[in-house]
Amino acid sequence: MQFTDLGLSAELLRAIGEQGYTTPTPVQQQAIPHILAGRDLEALAQTGTGKTAAFVLPILQRLTNPLTSPLQKVTHTAPRVLVLVPTRELAAQVLESVRTYGAHTGLRSLAVFGGVGINPQIQTMRRGIDILVATPGRLLDHLGQRTVDLSKVQTLVLDEADRMFDMGFIRDIRRIIERLPRERQNLMFSATFAAEVRELAHTVLRNPAMVEVARRNAPAELVTHTVIKVDQDKKRDLLLHLFAAHGWHQVLVFCRTKHGSDALAKKLEQAGVRTAALHGNKSQNARTRALADFKSGKLAALVATDIAARGLDIDSLPRVVNFELPNVPEDYIHRIGRTGRAGASGEALSLVSSDERIQLRDIERLLKREIETSIMPGFEPQHTHSVPRPAAGRPPAQKPAQARTRSSTGERSGAPRPPRPARSGTGGAKPASHHSGQRHR
Image 1 (tube, one colour):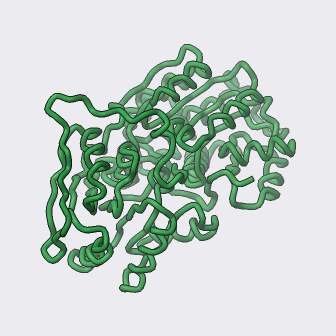
Image 2 (cartoon, rainbow, N blue to C red):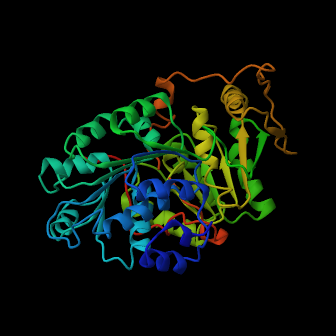
Image 3 (cartoon, rainbow, N blue to C red):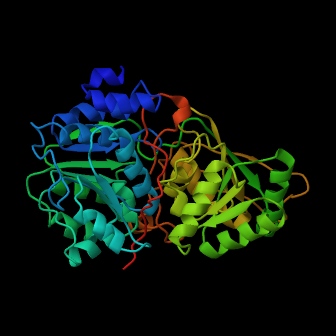
């Protein structure tokens, strides 16, 4: 199937062609026809499969079609489409996708989020917008100041709905939904569908079509998983050794805490590895600059908390290093989803100390297989790494719902699209200067 087979307009096909894409991804093939037909949609797709373009393209088409959206000119401050996302980084990607694929439509769009001044957002909305991408906290700020009117919304998109729950946004989402017209199209996209997400889907979606292109909590298929056993106090030196021995040039390193991220980034920088830290305490300008430098190759390492486990889309990222394992096994899936995207291979390397044996066991249960382990000469652990293995035939242990509601850092993180080199499917465009974010009141 080609994009030309999906019934998209000439303007959209031109924009898609300018990005070098010809073949839609599976989620795009399945979702676009349902959205064009005006149906509600519940979509479950593995990270990196092109979820963003799967809803952006048909929404742009419907907005420019007088039969599905008669308002052809922006004459007021009421957007016709609302896309709710959990983080600044994800809002940046969605907004850029809207602007890239809508380049020849004349539609106006805006992303609103915390961490930056609200007045420029207000001024842009006063000039009129068609599509509003927003984080829940900042959108409620605008609603409180009466600077946005949601009474004309025709389509609501909940992107990364499971992460909305993880970050405690469910009450905010329900408050926002109360301000929307009762008659509208509803689209829910998510990497996983926990019980809480399905409950929300039942209350928001009406007779939805269901699209599922990957099993729940599926890891990226082309990622190689490896564990190196090492004592906690030797991890920093081992990581430096790996950088020096292998000449690593682009590595996303995950830590559990903001303080730990800063400390590790400082250690790497002092050793001559160009590094920046990325976490929720960083200013928006610092986060934007660090991400841009990492993507451009100016930085060899980006040390991040789980705020970067979703919403970061980096072309052909070769590897992810878990300096510390996450406490919630599902977060491991989202972390490694930054590599091995859109047909490219990737590596997920975890440095595991003896006190992380429970986290490793839970991750292996989720993966339903053991991860290959090794010991690096010169960094042999002095403490036992005995890890209880799942009994044969035993189903994976299920985390309590409360344990799944937040990552170990309590941070917020965001979602992706396939990188351009694969040229198969549209996963969205490169992030813009606007970024979404955590709630700032």
